[in-house]
Amino acid sequence: MEFDEPSYDDLKEQVAALELVTAQLRAALQAGDARIAELEARLSDLEERLGRNPRNSSMPPSQEGLAKPPAGNRQQRRAQERRQGKQPGAEGKHLAQVTDPDEVLVHAPPACPDCGADMADAEVVDDEVRQVFDYPKIRPYVTEHHLLRLRCRCGCEVKAEAPREATAPACYGYGVRALACYLAVHQHLPYDRMAQLFSDVLGIEVSVGALAAMVAEAGGMLGLFSDTVRDLLRDAPAVHFDETGGRVAGSLHWVHVACSSLYTLIECHKKRGTVAMDEMGVIEKMRGIAVHDGWKPYRSYDVAHQLCNAHHLRELERVGVVWDQGWANEMIDLLVAAKEAVEQARMAGRVQLDASALHSIRVRYGMLVAKGWAANPAPEVGKRHGVHKKAANLLVRLDTQRADVLRFATDFRASWDNNQAERDVRMVKLQQKISGSWRTLAGARAYCAIRSYISTMRKHDVDVLGGLRHMFEGHAWLPVGT
Image (tube, rainbow, N blue to C red; front, side, top):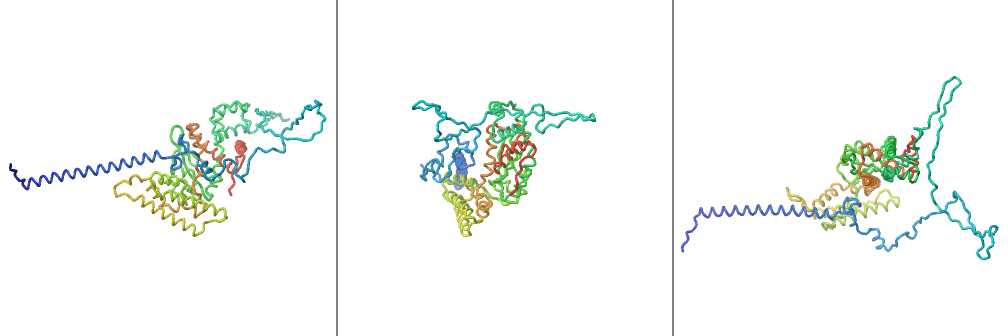
């Protein structure tokens, strides 16, 4: 059987068809590769999310639930062969006797157990002292004020002015109001339970509405205190900043904190960024170092910055564990070692690190950043960074802002982390968990003002209840700059 040879035109047509099929297959392969890369990125992101915990992310410890591993401190104690409890040489604490007890009771045996004789006139050979600490019986202390109306010889009648606290025929005194603010704001007691406490423990019937009115009244008395703290923070060598969300009147608001080791200023605002920061009036007018977590709006202000290295450690641990990149673990060791070097220098009375030690930190830091970029090369133009996008984002910050990462080592006014702000704002999150939200913005701002007042007093070892009482008396405690 004979076959006709294909003509040139037939061959050309077949080649064109094959080239078309080849082009279609290549396009399909490229689309498949892109889809695989996209799915790998999504899978990596999901695995990274599942692997998040408070030690490698900004997740709060309360969200870890029952999956939380054994406490690290216990493991460290075992590793260091330290027994639990008080360590040798540590200062002990115990309930010590006082020299001026409120009441002294003498107990003597009534009769001799051997012969049965009465021992009323027996010789005292020893006196063992034991003291019992208890609270006295609590009852309302009611002060009655008589406002006399007198008639002058000229016939004019004059009535005495009522004391500041006697605002009605029957009203609550400064102590009750101060305790209400303390329990509501510092101890986070809901108003209904607070009313029960006043009734059950103090014997005073106070309505929920009256308690809420006391807290609102206190919030309006702290304008001068807030202005004073604002001025002191502007002159502080370093100020810590943070913000956290909170629901007010059913919508998301933001609680902002500016603080130092001596002062706390907390405010609530509808906005999270520079609008709220400008109204707070600290960061744009401060002279010291702004310590924060690196959120972009803080960069809008022309001040010296210190980035929180506790945040960096969590992100580095995620990179080192999830993606097994050794440079991240080495960077953790470097940042911790630099922190220890600064602490040792401070303890030795120095105000800066040795030039050689600082140079070594900087050189090592640069080498580790370079190793990080080698492990996370930039993607091709027009393509996604792939599964290591978060590592690359961290590297951008560590590389381009290295002076702000290491400022604590070059300027001892800066802190290694931003824990001060996180501690001062943490109780706001606890309040939100208890109550769920604030009903009004005025109520949220009253809470924040009182919280600022109590926090600052505690930092100065001031009697909190006494300070709250003075506030209701009309002369709130004010901190003095140091």
